[in-house]
Length: 458
Ligand SMILES: *Cc1c(COP(=O)(O)O)cnc(C)c1O
Image (cartoon, rainbow, N blue to C red; front, side):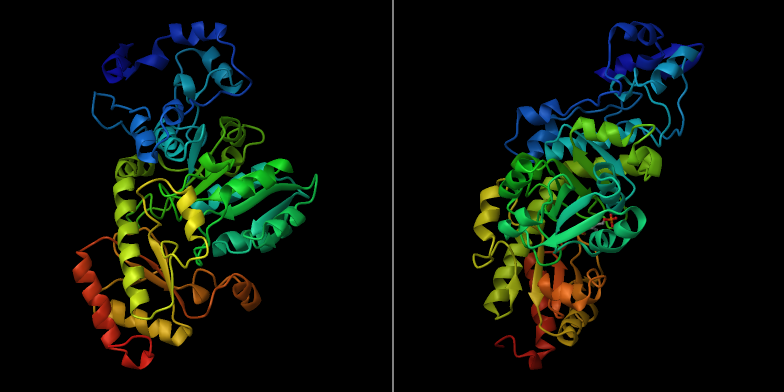
């Protein structure tokens, strides 16, 4: 067990052995490293890709300083060296986190790096690094890949914050412009790419809130042919979809949602090639290093405890969403759920999805008007405890929001119409608390309160 050999006593202090052995500092000289330190790659993930859960289980397990089954939290902002020369070599990039040399926690931190290794394993990418929020992962990676004058081709159905970033913030702050397209129209995507100017094709694997599923292999092929980097936000479908395995270059997450599962933490991740992650940590040009959306090590530790049961949670989110979608449809509701056969990308999702994780934990009910949507949500929360009126997703309780007036309110009416967001669209992130019978009973009881809706038979 690595933990037993890692602790040693130097100068009377108990310290982590590998870095402090002194000899290691010196014999590193004959290991000629590239200018930037290389991150350890998710070798195990590449070996067994049947299932993201298998890849996660094969990722390196970090033990605690005293042999604890959980890793220790490295809460330090700064790190000491035994010899002054080591500092110079760390700053020159000759000694890095792959050999347990750390400089400062806005740069790599061991605990955040451990969670990042798990994220890389989950997504089957060479490397990953975690950030303070999903938005900072998105903005940092786009700023790393695009320079002033750069161009992005993006889906027109995006998370509201991302849409605002691309529409308003980037053009004003750094002259990065975006053309929005219908990503299911591949001709339109191809036509929007400007040779030499377009750097990124950006879309969500399963889009918010309309649950449109992207054809990741085909879109990646189009981008590859044009030298464009594919960046996919996989927040809605962790475990269900593995975009990097389907051709995407970079996979982003808002960890605040399913991966956290507790609705108590804001966090994000960039998963991609080691060269990208290292460039983002570059002391002179790195967006993570210089903009500093740093994840706290204590937060990283908490999240690393939740990743092992993400697969189990996703299966149950999907199972219940499928059950409710089927039952709601039977009652005569207009339901959007990729697990239903009539969903336009049902077969596409089936062809891309990892086995046994279902079709995701989100469904949408189109209530047509905001008034009807609000009335239903009010009954569901305040009379029957079916769920909560709240934005966000991935919680164990069901969360409901009217997308047009909440998470997509940054969009103007035309943009919403183009993205297929009707004013009465209720997005539900289906939770797994309670029994299905109990929760469905609560849904039916709420319906019986609104007999004028004309949407159901009883
Ligand atoms: C929530 C969300 C984000 C933003 O993530 P934060 O962690 O809230 O910063 C980005 N993309 C999608 C699809 C989201 O749902």
